[in-house]
Length: 145
Image 1: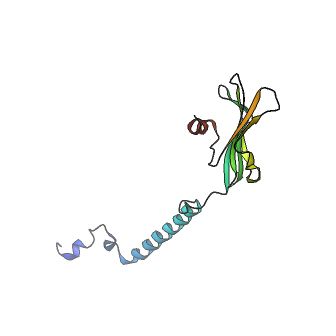
Image 2: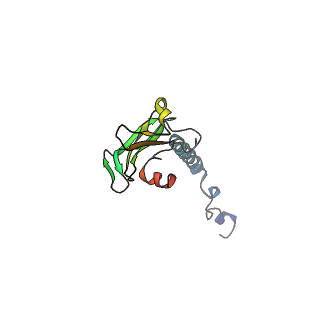
Image 3: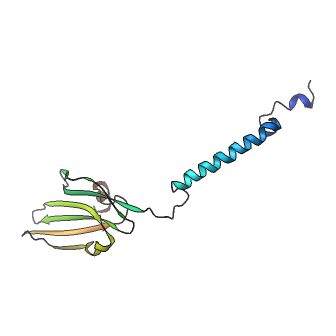
């Protein structure tokens, strides 16, 4: 049996499978790609221009460069369009205490300022940023050398 009839079952492509299996295989392939496409679309991979609903910011109520966060480290959420903020409290002897938090849109007027603090000899400067976790210690080291 070396004729064309014997070669029909040896191929590995779709044409070599029996006709009864072609339609179910095609249906499984279409259904799987459809389901995976919906999962990927729901995770935001197909819509890169759609901004996230919330901005995540690093929050620490008392931090120094030498010791890191000493009080209240976590992540806060604010609606997109708001900002992350870091306050630097300094004096003339190079003491630098930081406070990091979220800042809502309505309170962003104090995003970039420097003024004297209520404690004599200290002043406060603030800096806002607008990307996820842009005010954490690692990002501050990159963006604010």
